[in-house]
Image (tube, rainbow, N blue to C red; front, side):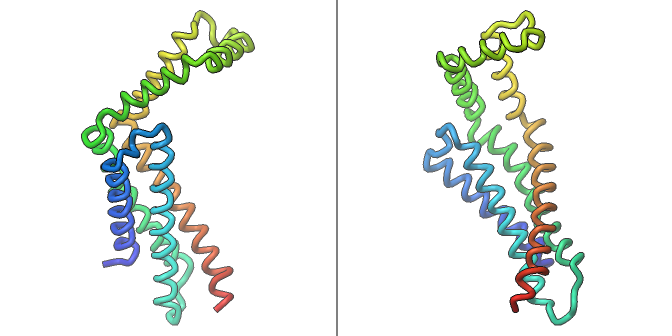
Length: 188
């Protein structure tokens, strides 16, 4: 099996285990859980891409492989990661932690009803009356709640996760390949 595919599978399983561990430990109830999830995902993706490129380069160093082979290895790792993680996120938000969207909605409503948030929103509405014409503070709260519910729907989570992980994996592949070729290879 290709090294990039192996690391894509390993890092996907690692990410899934991390998220399930956070769910079991109750960390998913924190307000910043989404940031923790994104951070864990990008870290796993970076580690998978970096290890697959560096190990493949060191393994085939005598053969004189090109930079394109390194980039291809990193892209394979990130593609497998994205293909496995996107359906997992849909499964997570619909079945495993199905109350997440409701908790997030309640957090948004609670944050938007704080006096500081209401004052800031009113200040924004006064600064640009054309953009908020005919809208009240309650309308804006309802709009934010609708946005959260839309962003956590399966039809939105899957494509956003897939495309963002593919794009991030491509960027990581280019950066790690450049770093490996220009800096690490020169040190050896």
